[in-house]
Amino acid sequence: MQDWVSWGFLIVAVVVAFFLIRVLIRLTKLSKDLETTLKSLDMELIPLVRNLKEVSEGINRLTIQVEDRVRKTEPLFKAIAESAGIVTTVNRVLKGGVAAPLINMAGLSAGVVAAGKTFFKHKKKGG
Image: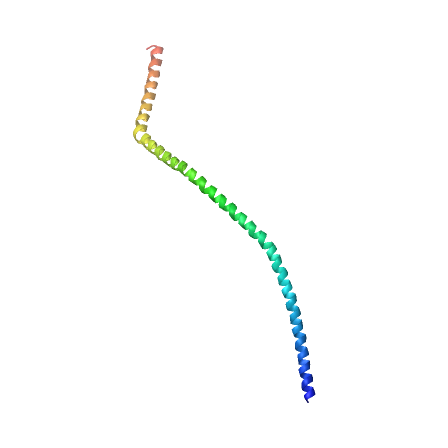
């Protein structure tokens, strides 16, 4: 009976050893695959990070240039706004204070010219 138990333990030990060896072989293959993947990622990520850094620096330079140009054009926009205010004021003055008398004067002068032409036509005919 002791021989059967010994043989049983031996068979169980061999089966367990067989499965452990297979697991170790798979773990070894997995670790090699992971190492290859990590090397590949390392080779691809470093240039990618460099490119991202260059792009980021380029965007920062562009942002600085845009801010500088905005600062330079801000007085121009203020001057345009002031000019628009002046034009609006002049327009109001012309509409309210000057336009009505000018229209009346234009009407009067047109009337005087028409009357003069009529007067001179009659005078030439026999007047």
